[in-house]
Length: 99
Ligand code: SF4
Image (cartoon, rainbow, N blue to C red; front, side):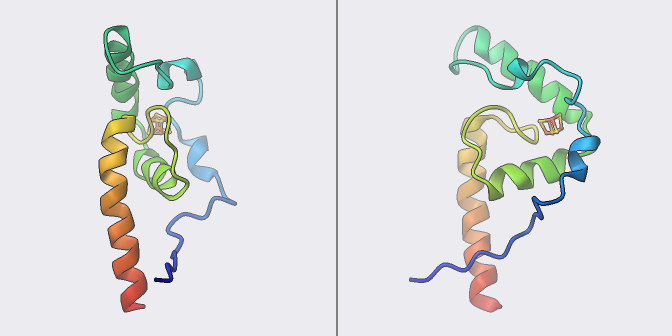
């Protein structure tokens, strides 16, 4: 089955990054090692930054579209994004089928 991907993000333009609440934050905060212990605290701290971010929606969309597997993006952890991406891909397929 052919899969036609309708881009929802124009990643030639990264204007949303200018609005990122994390742009002056240590990037390591958003890329914890593991999913237990101290990493859980790090994930929570990163997500707290995301909750105040103007670019959260676009950041999450970018992460979905480019299949970012690591780190916290758009207020979602790796595990959360894996689940969200299944829904995102299903939506892309539905949109392609009705286009
Ligand atoms: S949503 Fe989070 S990871 Fe994305 S730009 Fe904003 S602060 Fe950074």
